[in-house]
Length: 99
Length: 444
Ligand SMILES: [Zn+2]
Image (cartoon, rainbow over all chains, first blue to last red):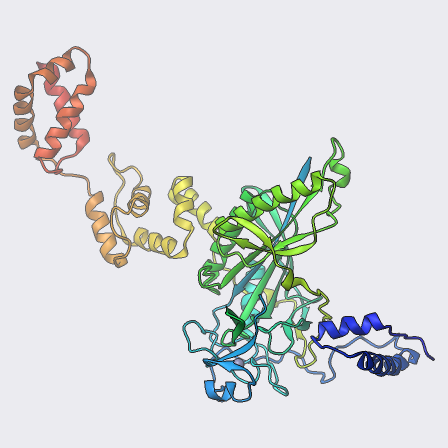
């Protein structure tokens, strides 16, 4: 079954939402790949799920919380936090001005 | 004719000890940039967010105080958008199963409906400088409660009063500083105008206009009012030209008191919400909402002051605007034993006056304040003999006043009352002084 057809505009919209710049070749490449992915997921439509409760997670857990309180074990120092940043200045992360 | 349709979104940062989904400190204020993070709030791959129980309870407390239904089932969702203040590329928020829904706030017998109250995480802070935008993630992940109203407002004044009441309520609950200067409470009105033909109002009442203008991040009640008033005029002008205002996000320029288009913020409002797979859903028992205890709220306190202590309405309002003032007042009342008398028919009202008029500094400890108040409210003991001598002396030295009084200018006596009070350095009861003076004057 081949129902889902993705067009170029949809790929460009998704690229924009993800802040990606695509070449013409890439647009066609991702259009095909994404189409295949969507088609694959559509296989699920063949299952009869009328009696299955919708769920959004698979662990069967509910109500997992922590008790309010500061715990620094996993905290990162300023140095650690900034370590892998490509662009930084005075211990700030830097991006091209957005406003 | 046009009628404004206004709804509100309000964000309040919770003052929990730790952040929403990790145990970094939620108190980021004044800390060195990027020194208050961990893999979770920095959005590093593989980090697992776990919700803060207290933040959930406090969001529900706010919801309950706003007369909302606390939902038995609730979950978190991912809201996707691309912005440098958001390290993960999505914000953990709530979409179709918020913690609380369908409440209301009543102000002057008018009900303003609350659509929902939900929980999310705050973003990092951006500083625009030269060609750069600098990012500090210390605030990233601080619990943020979002309160959304129905579009029930049709004027800026109601909006201002609603926001003031909401601010007071949140401060009473003790769950947020709601400090607008520091940005821990932020307000976003959305405004549009509905065309009304004569008699057509009823039919169109439930239809919302085809566009909506959102004004972002305003940090004072006065500015919200100004922004709304400006928008109403701006949109009216466009509509009168038979055009439709653009659906957009606008900022507010405090100096010029105008709103301006912020196109960069609205590139693509396609948030692609989906359930946060890393956080199991939340469930609450039928009895659970009873365990969330709402303290006495400002409106109830005000009513109680008027009913129980016979405080004047305006004064009860002033005393209840700030929880600290209200607490102070109540503690002073409990410590002051002042009998009511002819001079002081309602000691409670007199204490209220002392606080409101700042007759005694309210910065001192309650005990000290109460002692001073009792001293001030003590019926004045009048030295009758000294008073008699003084009065006769003054009448003698002011023959003109005595004459005026005899001619029927009874107000002339007030001059002598003033003189007596001054001579006796306030150690006399003005009422008695006046009685005595009039007695003596009549004898002449
Ligand atoms: Zn953290």
